[in-house]
Image (cartoon, rainbow, N blue to C red; front, side, top):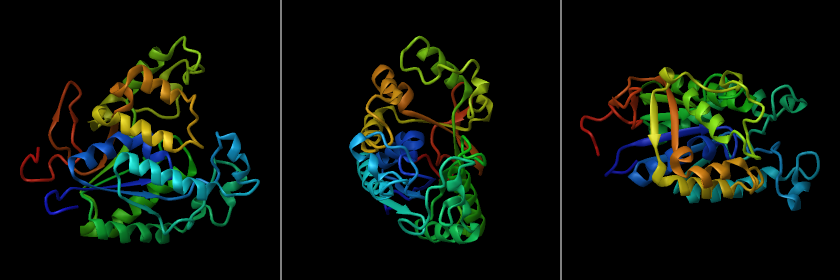
Length: 292
């Protein structure tokens, strides 16, 4: 935070690129407004797929160097978003990517899924006491879609907030997606060759999605969506050039890419509006006057 802007936002994500897909527009939005934005990434993403053929040998089963490459990708993504304060939980390489649920990689002795909860939370607690965020963003208890590292990120973030006492964030949000938005997306992509929802018959079949009345906040970062797209392109090993995400960016611009949603896990809603009664500012209600 700065003397001119006391707002401090802390985000806890599992792997490099998670910060962009779920919260990139929100991060860029608050950076542009002058708030302090701190990103904590819990692993290097060593088990990720590689979509750049020339880098295929970096994979875990060969050179096992993908994690180091993704450090540089994350640096470029943060630069695109304007984020200058980024940390790896416990330092780069402290915790290893666990891979998808049920894989042998879940049992690696250094994987995040096997981390001691209080020790990991202690690393985050140090950061929390330094930056003193009023607002924290992480995942729900299912890690949004069930990945073990996302679930552990949730557990670590919530345990750190518990340990922080008076230094804990006043409001904690979880990344979310309203079912109405998913339904609109399914319809918008119907008939397209690169349809990410081709096998989805009902929105309820997806491993994520919240009823609209569970959503607490909608952050409109449509004026920042080009920064989000640039940050996505920085994660080239994970998001290929032909990804459907770029199709959304090209076809719908900021309408889909620049708007992000959250549920409220801790704290009291501030000022709400619109047909759904959602907040438009994560810091609403935390300061005596409307800063805008």
